[in-house]
Image (cartoon, rainbow, N blue to C red; front, side, top):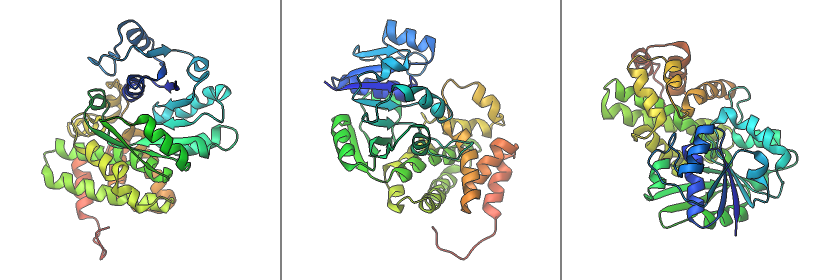
Length: 335
């Protein structure tokens, strides 16, 4: 019997815990919020983040890091990126270097500009590269809970571990692919949220399908440019964790980041949007990280820059679109 600990009781953490519990594994789910802990423990429902979804009785909600890590064969960490370092630091005394860590967090730290694998390397003692796995891809939590066909990717430098986990996670409705391009998968999963805010704003402003298609494809181009400059493989961005996740997040009605863009188009300030959300829209914070990464690496990312300007500088989204459309033309390929 595989024993699994899941850290994070949001929609995706709860979904992954439920997914593994339904496969027959022992699952402990660490939950920070008192009301979420109570609802799952007493009612078997995460009313805050997954209302209406009945969870497996095999999930055991816990509130201590010792409980969620003790005796586990596998640990999943699925918390917002701005909490990741703090929670990982608190988990550190209870972690065994032989226990694989699967991270479902999609983001880039604002202060350090690190991805989650880089945070793991900076926080945990020793070399964790062979036991670190990134889980990403187009996967709305609710649809996975409802057992709609979904395909995701596990990225690990340890090919043997990735293959083992592929079998562990896979079902007849949840298909898992593997890759060794960790940085590419991480960047695709984080940066697509920024482009989704732009796509939501364009939809909210009534700019039509042409504009949405342009944002998705040109957004993919700038994500790929940054990714390749940081050592990622170009083909990674043509897969599930690149264009796949980008399409879903830019077009799906369940997308929190697209919703942020829609509200921005209504003239609502970003800070007010955030204060009214139960769940985290990673693209808001990631837009700052991406903006600073683009400057640091010398990579042209015009859509990302305009999203940053709208969110953090108060720029009018219509002016941002005009500036995107009228910036200097270059004689170059559409790449």
